[in-house]
Image 1 (tube, rainbow, N blue to C red):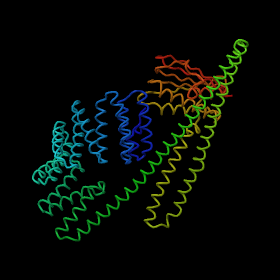
Image 2 (image 1 turned 90 degrees about the vertical axis):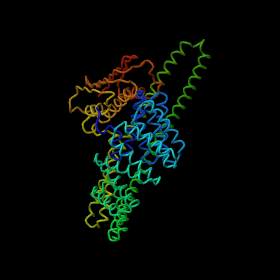
Image 3 (image 1 turned 30 degrees about the vertical axis):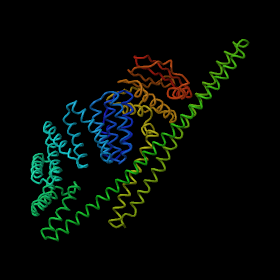
Image 4 (image 1 turned 60 degrees about the vertical axis):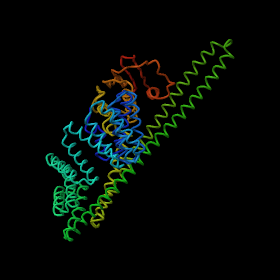
Length: 563
């Protein structure tokens, strides 16, 4: 079931860029696995915007190129145009104007083919900006194109923006008559719409026009006074910053040096606030980049370890196979029957050994997970809370500036406490610890359900039924892995999880209506996934059976002793 937190935009609004990226990464993998390429391109564009907001241009372009390959391979024209436009805009930011023009022209060609006026406006605005920055005569051509498609779309906001662009263009050409005409038009539309940002922008341009062209500083001053009244709570710092600076100039020209000095100081104070805000944002960006880089490095290290283990296992298997083949040639004619029995025993021993190794490894991971979760929850979290109390203890003796710094410190401390708590919950679900296995699995089904697949939960266990904590943890992560496999591989729209306890045994049944697979292909040699789960269940004195056919869904039956 979708919630308001089920979006990249939600996490960005909360300034949690790490969760936004993790969410986008999981979604992109899921869309790619299910071949939902339209949704994949959209989420990749969003992911690139996150990196662009972090000023990480390298990853921004890298992600857009990955999305471009999918869009081109699957002939998704609309997505190609959006991606080309994004690549063009990014290249414009880094002054790669040739590349910027190339991709914006490609986007424009597709937009014309699709006859998409909204997209055509955005693309031609990008081209206009590039040619304005390079002082090319072609700027007017793309500005006229933007105006043409804007009028076709009949969007007042787009029309006002285009009129403002005409004002900027003719101002750069010193054609004040035409500039004033478009400025008045933009201002009129802004007033009709009632958009404060558009109105303040138009008034700012009017003030500049009155003071520079007409030399009427009283009229100019009035425009900036109007802007200042529009934002009493400083909600638009950019508009106020321009207004303070320009009105200071107007008062200076009118001989009112007292007010000129007053508004110049307000401008400087606002600049200091913006600088502090930018510094804080810069520090946040560095922290986020560090955290993202750390996660990526950990992932690469784990991937390297797994690959090394796989290579080692393959070499051992080849060595054993060679020995078996050699022994077979030597003793084939004399001890054929004995050899077959020995092979059978060796295979059984090898299987048991692999299961024990896998089970021991997983048990070790569980112990480590519980240990880390306990340390985070019982020690680190407690220490952070204690620090917060100590900070409160000496607040009364501080100055206002020190109290302000203390509030910032508390905020950072709270963020750290929240992150420690979230990590602890991810390692060992709190619902499992507090209420037991049925409640935790029911919540797991609810959390995994979305618009693509729904998980239904059924249990005949008593509401207060609890098992050994170690047993509950193992069962929870076994079921979690199986449900994850359903989401990744089954392409199912419905799945069901059932729990039942009969005569000292816990029975778990997982079904789905997906594409199914050939269950006979699953063996110990797989090394991971199902083999891990089977090893863990066998170590718990249990058994797992998988029934599946291609095109006919899957049924997984698990029986585990609780004695």
